[in-house]
Length: 122
Image 1 (cartoon, helix red, strand yellow):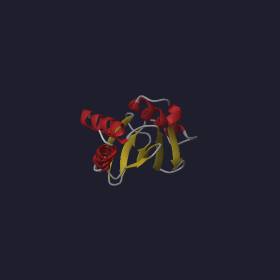
Image 2 (cartoon, rainbow, N blue to C red; image 1 turned 120 degrees about the vertical axis):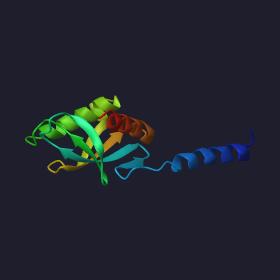
Image 3 (spheres, rainbow, N blue to C red; image 1 turned 90 degrees about the vertical axis):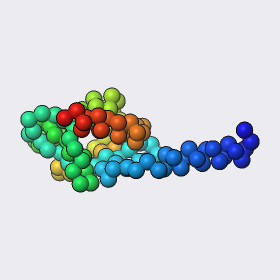
Image 4 (tube, helix red, strand yellow; image 1 turned 90 degrees about the horizontal axis):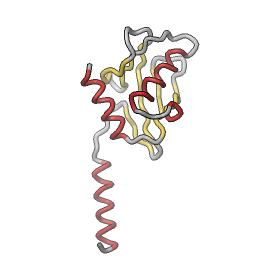
């Protein structure tokens, strides 16, 4: 393959990746994904729910006391994404139901697969 053909081929792959339409609760970064979450503490079960506006609804059984709900949220996401807890970082919303979470080193495709699989299972 010539350099020009390789460059065009590379640009074509990049354009295909750029054409993935992301839901409003996901944002792609070079080193991971940012996820907007609306957390519902004291729920009957720990589960990833349906998108709710610009956020993904997540329910946890823990109360919103002493960061217990935040800890359960991080563990739930890490387990669902099959990644270490250290890759799930709470950026904003430590004392709010509206949270912004960074998923280090994960692709948008991986997160979308897990979210869609979890929401269809319910």
